[in-house]
Length: 112
Length: 113
Image 1 (cartoon, chains in turn green, brown):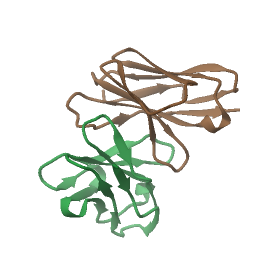
Image 2 (image 1 turned 180 degrees about the horizontal axis):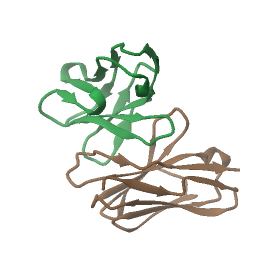
Image 3 (image 1 turned 90 degrees about the vertical axis):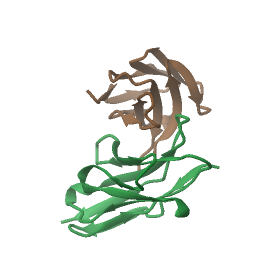
Image 4 (image 1 turned 135 degrees about the horizontal axis):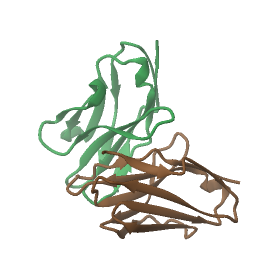
């Protein structure tokens, strides 16, 4: 069965710390991968996506993610977090069938 | 314009009421979606319309009834809801050849009393 898992449920960091959020997927065949962010009281926004090509994907707000096919992973990274990065982060996967499977989400809290 | 709009922002209804949620996009997207999101949980897919036809129904109870009057508009009609249906209802849309990239609206916060 298709699935997406995020092992970090709650991450607490100080400003300027580096961030890595894990995402693993289980899909047969072609997979498209996404990271969405939901800031407090705001709607889901696309951070970045991977369809094919360069496995290192750059997104908005200094985020990047690396697709590692052999590990079925698509981890999100940011070298130096800010207080404004406090949000819920969702990894998602799709296979061109209009169905996105979301991970359970990671709550990130950044303290000044 | 890269916006998906939803109205109302908040809705409180009794279990015997009939109400509707509205979603609009003017980006020429071919698919529109309804999701339900409970607090601190990921969105759960409810319905997908592709080119104005219902393509996915994730076994949603019949008290939720979707409607797609045209390519820009998506409604969700609500009737005889239960308190456990209280949630944030999200609309999304995706472009042709978008590779499943979905763009989300701000949601309607629904409370069922």
